[in-house]
Image (cartoon, rainbow, N blue to C red; front, side, top):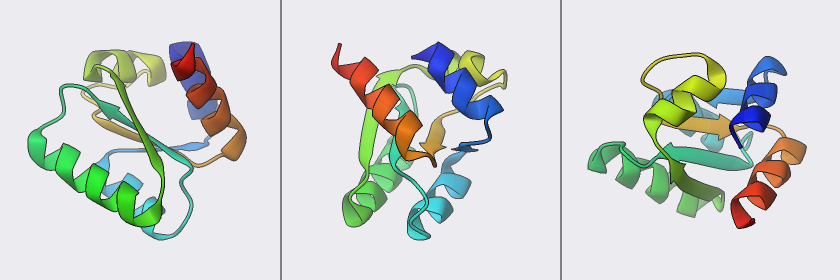
Length: 96
């Protein structure tokens, strides 16, 4: 998953951070949200509530360290995927 997440980042098909991801969600631009397993309870509640409202799937199976390393940044808790193809790719990887 990390490899494809890095590709999505280089292709500029992601939003990084809670606020930017929720804003993109409101604008109908997200197809998938990746949430760090070690995100705060408030962040998790905010992301899950908004994703339920806008019917976008949330994957919570990577730590913030793994998410951060995948895109070469530090302390990342929320990543939004803005491309349908990448979101399908990441969801298929999760199911394996």
